[in-house]
Length: 488
Image (cartoon, rainbow, N blue to C red; front, side):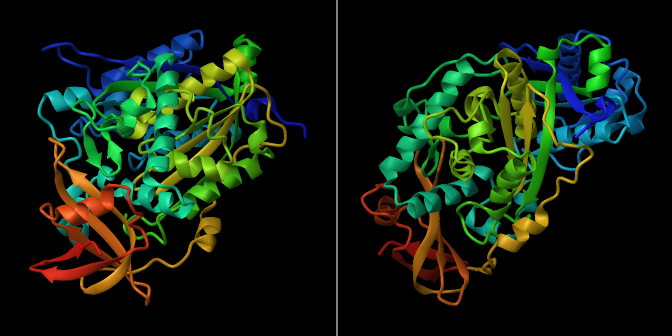
């Protein structure tokens, strides 16, 4: 198929910034990091590109919510405010979606040069006393507030424990898989230009709780979850193949953008048909392979979003990616750094460098919300035949058709019911604050209940690995305004 080079989207520049304030030294804010990342991407592309940039796509930031980011970028760059387009929500898939939007803008002939940029100065914000995620409780419905399911760290373990049971793994086997994946991530981060923590860790250092690796929510420790206390920014410059060649960009520095796919789960975290392999994730991954006319054997590198272990573990199985190969090119959200919604901008930058150095094809999977948003895309060192832009990347109808019914959530059912999934949440000293157990009824309802912190027997049943709690009958009984679960 003959294609117009002026409508073929390519990446010509990537840039990253890591700001590490020491002592009382003031750290940069998010806009300063974005401007630094744009400057680095411009330099990476040989200079002169920001003067030609007609549109900037912005990943929203949370650490300095008082800043009007589009207005600040317009003032700093001299661009018209209408040419700076900030995404509607900060989500882990947002950078991949914006890269797809940039490719569509090039393919449609709307612009000749555009950029994607994002940053978080959460380290600066935390030092100034700002809360990490101040709106988590406000946005949660009453049942989640009552039972303490507010933060991602309290909800993602529900996927982990359900998935382990479905796979027939013991607790030790499930943790060993996490330790191996995360250890490989740390090894990648140790060699990654833009990573925040550049030190390899052994599996036992990751999965075994310690003073420096406290338990967060069962079965996750600190070294298994995203590290949001970072000051990081990243930017990508996208243009057409024709413009890149006219500018004299060497062919081995041009990275081609393939087709992408998006599919999502319902917005409310508890509105899940099940807790293993969400339909949106499965659809986004599989459809991206189909739309690029490739299989997993054609992939040389992948970046599978890694806010919590359950996400890349589920994604790699859908993709068919081997267990003994790294699932990241940047280092993962623990070691590469977890700048809230902007991690995948860093992953894009790392993937571009990897493809420039060794050629081949890369797969990017972004995930956001409470395992809600999914967007995948392919990058390649070589032209991708039969891929045309603009493209409609929405595959929601496919995901909706394959998703099962969503059970109604209640805490008004007493009696014995089989456990669907669970977690235990710990305080900063490693002591159990409470447990959460979801059970299922014969008529399809989902029951939410709390485990009391002084119920040592029930907490041990959920966490000691002697038996698999999922599927076991537990007892739910009312106590005041809450439903309390006890072990069989």
